Length: 239
Image 1 (cartoon, helix red, strand yellow):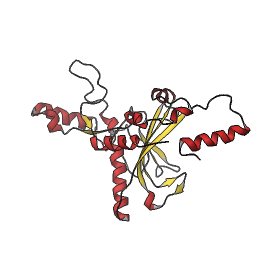
Image 2: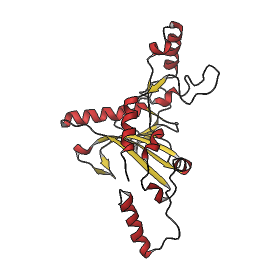
Image 3: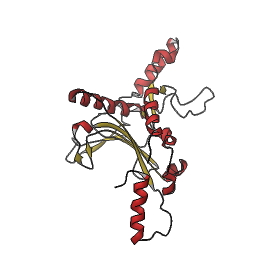
Image 4: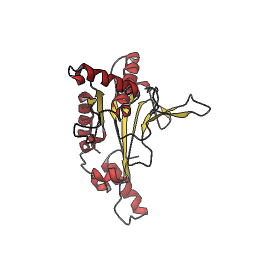
């Protein structure tokens, strides 16, 4: 196990002494996570950490591919709950996944209480948001060879951690009561709510006044607190 570039390089050097490499090692995939912990009493810590996991799940904006939660209580062996179905709500105690293992980008948000199936001490429980990059996405951030990790600026990955919140309908309507009614009706009809995940806003407010497709729903705004926290963590991350 190597958790920094120097240790990783040494491990590869040790292996190559017996099994010489024919070319420089390449990076096939990378997983980057940001953890949130709470300092306080056990009861406060658990409650706050679960709440933080829920905030991350309901604030993460992704290019949605099968947003889902695996629920072990469904059926004999558990089953995925696909959150594109209106009426469903995110459970912060379940793992929230977006994307598949073969996709260039995939996300997970969860309350981390285990590590490789081993239970963690309660003091190490945390809320985690992580992204896995491979293929074209990995190339787009300048990671191809192992040597690219030496001194890499992980803040370049901030664009894969987008956090948003809905704009208050009254503010979005800006005093227009007809627009206010339409905003509320559209959200209700589409079950557009963070409680189901921000993918529920995909069909709302995506056209500008020139009918061009927006990259994000006009019903959403940046969660600056989360954006700053993750960007600062990435900026200080060193491998």
